[in-house]
Length: 317
Image (cartoon, rainbow, N blue to C red):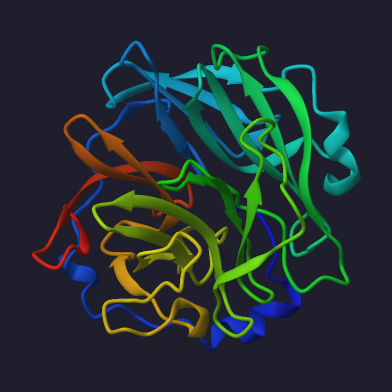
């Protein structure tokens, strides 16, 4: 996620941290200005052409931009608090790793409630006609995880397949990333099925984001450790599949359920631990939106374009 997990898993996760030989080739984030201190950003383009960004924070933080460069604070999703979430947050107000989309004339927001290092977690849904602070309606619990479970219900992402079916991917550490089907009429869980879509044998993986391009569904994930300021080792990996439920394979054909993933962005220069990525298909091409850490440990907004090679694999430009 996001400020979650680690604890007893840190020792296992450390086995999976590997330096990137290609890191020096990665571009710096594109220019952004204004209120750009974010963690776990997600962004949607509004019907009027402006942008609405939501990120981890007390009661979930909102930012807006008219040009994708200058951002300003726009309050919180739940200015009155979210009491339904406090059973998972230990009474705290900090909510994590939102996912935002605009469908059928309203905004859909999936988000996480948990405490650091615990898989006693939940994902909730809220909707809004405008996306503005205070306009959001709590729609209920989507999925929860308990300490006896082998997964962690945080870091949600909604994807809709070519048949119009709704799917929610999520997960962090434990046995890896999962997917469940949703009811498009309610946005809540449909049935009891759960599908494994990526994992590293208990190691550091989280924050799935699935997007369709051409014939493939691309699953972007974050490997290694966030939330450690300039010492964070987060990096962005990708695999793809012709089916939204997988199997997802990396460029070398290694299944993501077996630790596979092709690196597309890692720390370089003064950019530390980039990750918790989202992809936005804008009118001028695809964008990757993420957070990274400056040398002083501040979490900042990163936005870059994505380009694709002749085989359809993405790279950050």
